[in-house]
Image (cartoon, rainbow, N blue to C red; front, side, top):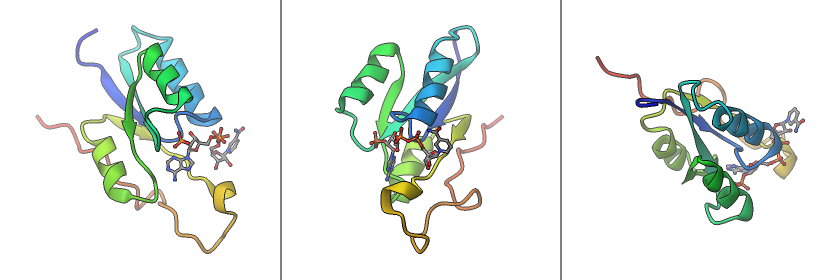
Length: 107
Ligand SMILES: NC(=O)c1ccc[n+]([C@@H]2O[C@H](COP(=O)([O-])OP(=O)(O)OC[C@H]3O[C@@H](n4cnc5c(N)ncnc54)[C@H](OP(=O)(O)O)[C@@H]3O)[C@@H](O)[C@H]2O)c1
């Protein structure tokens, strides 16, 4: 299907994001394509998603520029943060207001 809408998925190699990526890939006529964000595009899980048909791109939520680049051209984004990785309420994470926004489609 041409012109699929890209959904950028944070945490794509994990349980939450991985479920969404697989659901998108399992519905080839659904009109959406999955872009899987990961810190390591060469990990076994990332390679598995690529094999299934996902576009796998590097991004780290601690590096907003990398997330912005990974969101470029996307129609929408699925975002999770990773409190349990650091266990610190003091750490600043992107919030719904501060996540980079996928650019609005033109025209
Ligand atoms: N699983 C559940 O049932 C459940 C339910 C409710 C809420 N949650 C919450 O949802 C979030 C994700 O949970 P999960 O179970 O899907 O996690 P998970 O299976 O443990 O996977 C962790 C994911 O986080 C990504 N990640 C970690 N640090 C990252 C960073 N700095 N930048 C980009 N990606 C990063 C990892 O990607 P790479 O290693 O490939 O970069 C991986 O995809 C957590 O906050 C969890 O508490 C989970």
